Image (cartoon, rainbow over all chains, first blue to last red; front, side, top):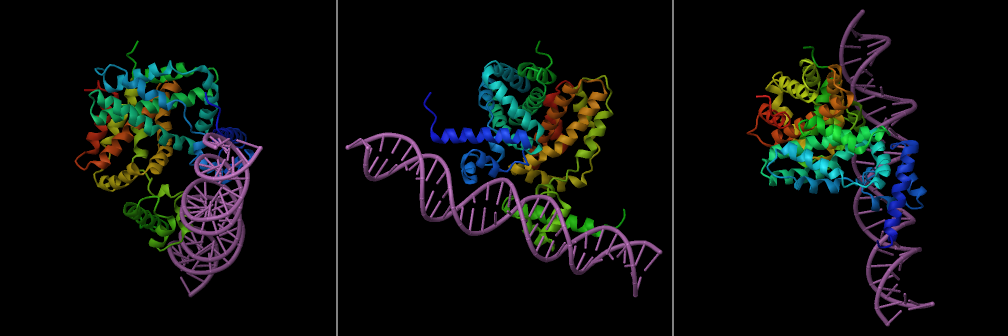
Length: 186
Length: 186
DNA sequence: GTCAGAAATGTTAGCTCATAACATTTCGGG
DNA sequence: CCCGAAATGTTATGAGCTAACATTTCTGAC
């Protein structure tokens, strides 16, 4: 992998400082000025790297992987089942390495109302992508949209529960959530 | 019904002006200063009535009704089915009068990303209430939470679709959405 | 190594959302 | 009518975010 450019380094420094400060003092109590100062940079530079204070936390490592996996499922399954099973398959692809870093971020999101709200905007892209795949498989647009949104809501709930309980495994948690929607998979 | 107090009148005037201006110029392009001015009042007064710009739109007439209806379902049903059927029952209670007013608001929300995000915060209270009822019926907390969030996501998707399509009926739309989650209700 | 173009960052200024403290007007019942 | 209380206005302040322009810092060709 190419050596990280200066841009990538400051971005990552900002992201790290932000997460640490947010965990220490809370999201709202931490101003972007503090973050920038801690990262040895200006407030302006922060906004050059992240469109908003929230974006410093919401760089989701999961979103890209998911949509593809859903499309890989046979298109003769019902929309909901297809989305659910696609999700299940996508889980196997995740490395254990990123999981603990992700946990900190998800936990922060789970505990911060405005971050939970902002995360939805993030999810909409993923949801739309899933819905597209479902529709391509023959489902009507409405059912596809509903199925995609419902599944993502379940997954999100599972993510939050996972982040808060160190004994929980991501796979377990999401598996359990998807079982609620699609019990008959055994 | 008692004559509206002064507080109620200005609140409603603010709410009306806000909705109209938002529809005309878009949510972000409309400042609360404009709204206040249009309502013959100060910016400060706006924030005395609504905690945020978003709250002027997100006074949800549905939320209160829902949770109760879910609790009324027999507690031997599965969490998801119980939430779904409770929702279905709740629909019958809504008057046709508020529907067209609600449509304007929901449509605005459906078209405005930051409003969709803010609406989630609104939903969380409802979701928690539903989950409580499900848990009281014997479901474990995790499944109850997942079921509640999934159902609300489906309902939200249905609301947005309904708001955008004048031919759609609220009952139809939500009914169709819930069918996706719980096809075996016939 | 150096020098020029490009990329990253800094500076300044300004708008909007939101909150707090205190003053003023307006309402509504006795 | 009049007084307490509720509603609103005023002023000040801070944080998030954007725009325009200046400055520094990289990077690659020579």
